[in-house]
Image (cartoon, rainbow, N blue to C red; front, top):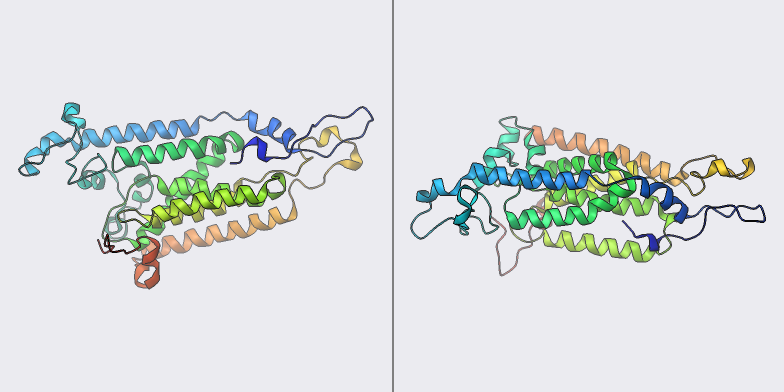
Length: 328
C-alpha cells in the first residue's frame, strides 16, 4: 500500500466561516486505517514457522542417514531430529521431497487421480527450506501488515487464501511431473490486490503515476524471478490474477465525504458510497473470478493438461538459457 504522504492532505473540520472544505484523504486515513490492528498476518507467519518445524520433525534426517550414501550427511546435525537434508538433496536447507509429498505438497496425479483436492490448500502452508520460508515470510510481513491495517483481517484473509488456491489451481494445470509447495501464490495475490486497490481507488492518490510505476516494477521483478528453474511461476501468476480481481471486489474505498456525511449539511451530502466506475470494476471482477475458478477447477479435475493446449505457456515458468535447462 502507499504511505500516508502519497495521499492528499487536508483537514476534516468545519472552518470558522461556516463553509465545509472538500473531504480529504487525511481525514479518511485517520478514521479508517487507525481502527485496525494487524494480528492475522503475524499469526500466519507463526503458523508457517510452526508448520516448518513439524515438517522437519517428521522428516527426521538422522534416521535416514544410511540412505544418503557415502560422504552425504545431514546439515546442522546439532539440531538432531530437526537437522536438514544433505545439500545435494535440498539446497534450501529443508526436508526431503518425500516428506513434503507426505504432508500435503501439490501433486497433479494425487489431486486428479486420487481425488486429493485438499492439497490445493495444504501446499500453501508448506515450504521447501529455511531460505524459502524466510523469503516468503519477510515478503508477507512487508506487504500484508499494511494491507491488514487498512482493510482489516477478514478481507486480507480472504484474499490470501483464495489467491493461494488460485495459484495452486493454475500450477496444477501446467505442472504434472513435480511437486509444488509454498505461500508464493498467496503473496502474489496480495501484490495483485495492491495494484487493483490503487486502480479502483484512483482518486485518493496524488502521486498516481509514481505509485503505479513503482508497484508495477516490484511485480515485474518478482515475476521475472519466477522464470528461474525450479520456481513455480504458474502459482505466482495464478495467485496474482486471483488477488488482482479480488482487490476490485473487496478493497473499495468510499468516496471522500461519505465517512463524514453526518457532519455536512443536507445539500452537501453524497448520495452514493462508491463511484460508478468502482461498481463497474466490481461487477466485471466478480464475473471473471467466478468463471475463472469454475473453469480452472473443472479442467483440473477432468485431468486436462493445460501445457498440451498452450505451447508458448512454458515460457511463463522457465526461460531457457545456455546456463540451465527447463525440461526438468
